[in-house]
Image (tube, one colour):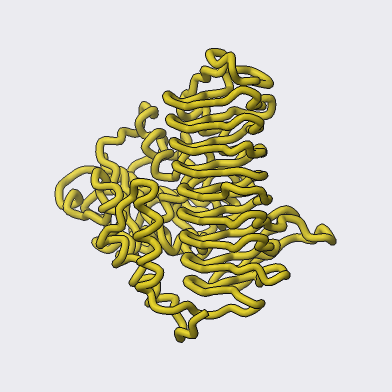
Length: 419
């Protein structure tokens, strides 16, 4: 049975991270959604990962094929033959309901398709048509009351809000077995079996790992400097470095992050450079974000009112009193930058400290200087910076990457003004 991971057209609800990546590549808990689906399929007795096929928006596909050559992305040839397909929403948290889904049936939440099981030959031949076609496929339909916590997030802030709980569930899903008791140099508070430290990791004396409130995962090849404190539930990806930082509970990091200062209940997609002091809380940061020294965000209003967050359609109510910022890929901030509560910052933007809080939205590739939002100069300057930055972490600037950011620049750019 083919497992087809599809987007449902609601990518704007996961702005700005969704501008540069498929929804199935968003991080949550210990995994990206694709990694979680692979783990679930591999461990489930009823769902086989014989063929995982991922679909996304056409302008993203070439770059993500380059990045993950083993993945089948936007490939329809397998649907010419006979057999069933299990269609899974890119943002589904898989559980037993998926494994028990009957033939020719589908599960919806608030009219959004979550999963379906159908003949593979009936799968539409366009990535953008898969979700809409499920409404008209004549499948036996079950509607779950929604939004249903723990099945599918509805907005990007849901990933942040439930990140700690998701890590504990992912720990169980992956069948993780901790090895913290084998690391006598590390001060572990709580059960050492709730701490996993990957091969090749270095942890200096006087580092503290607190697993009393949830598990802690540290990926292979990482380094934790002296006087760092890491509180579970927490996930730190491969090749990261914690520079004497305070990593509070509910925080997930992808690979190759450099983190100092204080981070609370946040998600770093990967390759984030927050080397210096400063506070990031209840936030989601994309890849290649570089935060200048003392950059901090607000995650609580002075009047404790509920927080709104910018999306391309409107500023939406989160229902949360604590919510920070959402920062796209390749955003850079100067020293001392102060980011307002609920701020969204598009990929490629530059923020220069102006002595005041940022606006609620900084568009992609824009500069925020002297209290004003300006368009930058030519795209070539942005690409030249990428050519300097990415190889420092062993990542090549490919033709697919340049094509993707060029397309995105054209989709989001206004008149060039220059900083």
